[in-house]
Structures are given as structure tokens and as C-alpha cells.
Length: 530
Image (cartoon, rainbow, N blue to C red):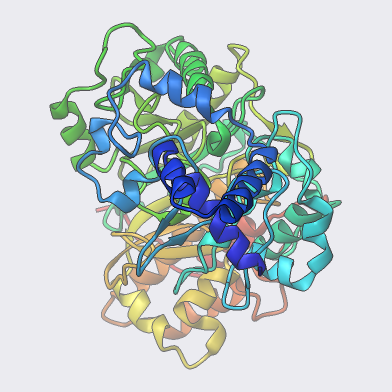
């Protein structure tokens, strides 16, 4: 029997109920019964990092569950989502979904990966011995290789974005499985070798004071987000029901100590019965949920097979929720893809204020004794390797209609829209998300996460948007200064004698590309205040 077939049998056994397994045994010949019993015995020898019998019992003690072990909160969802929101490994097959790889140790043999396109499968195809080296290992908390790679085995790839294809189940994964994680991280972040060091800097005093848009006419909103993981707990793919509740309680207790403009309240998701503050036994009201969702400030059950296969939907919506301050410009999502997703935002161009608020919140929460996962090599430790380092995305919605028209079909390849932004260490999205094509207002943010410090990336955003706003302003004038705009862009993109913003480093060896962006901006007139 081939590797793919054996994996399919194991998946079917895992997905079947006890009654279904007994019915199969009773319908078989004596010889086939012995073969099936042997296969079942072999399957039971494999272990999981979570005791699923106890986990299901803990879950059932608090909720009325359906046939998929799901709460009524996800009862409205399609079956392919519900199958990832209970207790068992995500196993589902349809025309669009083929999730079958089990989270067990030792990891089951790999299927044929020739059609897969992800960073992890690239590495597994390149180095076949790596899987055999790692498949039987597990961390002190019991996390195995299969827990990390299931999402990349079950999902062949995204048409527009090449996924990482692996997650970490706990902090130790990044060291125990380093022979696989390190080359994946190096490839995903465009060069970050196993001996590289990441420097963190959460000091708001190191954020530049530059006004991105003195006119107030171009920058619409400013937003910054990152994640944090709490040391001593498994990461979301491998949290048990009970552990996730303990984690929620510990984080919420720390958040509730915040004072002044950071002070606020915690709201479990509607339908969550975790109730860490003792005041919302059924979670937030439907009205509160609708209000937060309408303004894009709340998350729902995962509707991506990448997340479902990664284990992020289990026990939904228990122990998930949102903390926000009284001014509702600081939000902390609990137990979504990461332990905490921290967001600071406001209308207008004051990115410095937004970043300072975010940094104060992180620093004050950690000052309560809640220790965040961090390493000298990888910076802040998060679930997905794509977010390692800072996990930070500082972005603004900016009106850049004329600049986009000027750059999207530029005669010079390095000054075309996406490529030029990449040279500057920036990226652009439509305001509706990564797959939306923008034409006027774009979400501009830092492109890097790892290898540059937290304040450095905020400064990239501020000085990068300063440059783009001045370019846009120049192009909107009657005497459009296209040559001057191209000169400034060429300098920022490293087409002159100096390196590009994304590659520039100071005498201390640290990235200083935001200074290159500011010098480029100074070649253009300021968009004066109205």
C-alpha cells in the first residue's frame, strides 16, 4: 500500500465514530477483521500532543455540541468549516478541500508533493531526508512535526500568495525542528540565515517625528498591529480546551490593569462561556458583536483551510474575545491565530501617536509579569513564521491615484508600482484586502517583519508615506513634475549611486532605509497645510 493510501486509511479511522468502526468490523470476514484490528492497533500507538478524550469531555461539560462536536455558535457555518471547529484533527474532503493529514507522532508518510507550492513543501521536496530526521521528534509539551506541517500538506498553495505552509505548536518547535523551520524562514523573509540575530526596539522615543501629510488631504487612517505569545503556554494550534481558558484568564487579568487612555473592558466572543471576568456568561451581546464587526474591529470563526488545518478553529468560540480601551483606538484580539493580536488605530496621519500607544500597551502588559516569547534569533515568537521578528504591520490608507497611474506601467521596470514599493521596503493593498486591486486609496505598509527592529519598521512606514504623498502632490499640480518624481523614486529604489531603502544599512550594521526614504522625499515640495 502506498503512502497516500495508508494516510487515507488512518484519516478515515480518525474521522469515524465508534459505532461506525464496530459496524465495519462486524461486516467483515474473520481475516479482514484481524487486518483492521491490526491497523487500528497501529494507529493507537501514535500519539497526539492533546489528550482528545479528555479535551472532548472538558468541552462537552461546558457546551451542548452537535454531531461535529461544534457549538451552536458555528451551527450556521458550512460543514467544511464546522469540521475544524470541534476537537478532532481537521479531516474533510470535497471538490475544493482535501484535508486528510493527521496530527500524530510519528508523523505519517508524506503524500506526493509535486503539485504543492509552499515554502515548507519546497524544502521537503529539496531535502527528502529531513522528514525522516524529524518525523519522530516531539517537544516537551508533546508537539510533533505533523502538528507543524499539516496545513502545508493539506493545502497545495494559493494562486496569488505563496503560503509558508507550517506553524509552530509551541515555542520549542522553532529550535527542535530548526532544520526545517530555519530554511523556510530564510526563504520566506528573503534571506535570514540560521545564525542571524534580530534586534527588538519597543521604545516610542525612537519613532521619528516627521509629519507625513501636512495638508491632511492624502492620509486617511493610521493603523499598526502585531501579535504576542505568552511564554509557558502552547501556541493556538496546540492549545487544549482547558489551557486556552487559563491563557485567556491570565492575559485578561493583565489587560485589566491598564490605566489612563489604555484602560478598557474585555468582551468574550458571543457564545463563549469562558467568562474570565465573571460578568458575561454568554459572551458579548449580538448588538456589540455587530457593532465591532461593522467597523472591522472583530474576528469570526476561521473560514480558511490554512487556519482550519493549522488547528486555529478548535473549540470555537470558547476563550476567544476582544479587549478594547474606552476610546476604542486600542484593540487586543484573544486566541485567534496568536495568543494576542494587538491593534492601535485612528483616523488621520498621526502614525507616531498610534505606534506609541501600541508600544506602551505591549510594554505595560509585559510589566505585569506576563512574559512574552522572544529569542535573540527570531525576535518575538508567533504562530506563523511569516510574522516572526516583529510581527508588526504599520500602515495607512492613502490617496495615491495619480502616482499609481504614473507608476503602474512605467517605462523603467524598477519604477513599476509593486517593484518600486518593494525596493522601498513597502507594500500596497487595496483597502478591501490583499486580493483587491486599488485605483485611488491604497493601504501602504512596511513589507518586512524580521531583521529590522519594531521602531525601524514604523519609521519605514512614516518616511515611506511621506515620500509617496509628496510624489502624489507633485503629480496633481498643473505643472506635473514627473521628472522630479522619478528622480526621487529612483533614489529611494537604489537606482542612483546609493543602495535602495530596503537594503541600506548604517555604520552600526542596522537597517537605516527610512533615512533614504526621507532624503528622497526632501527632493520634492511639501504638500502644504490647507
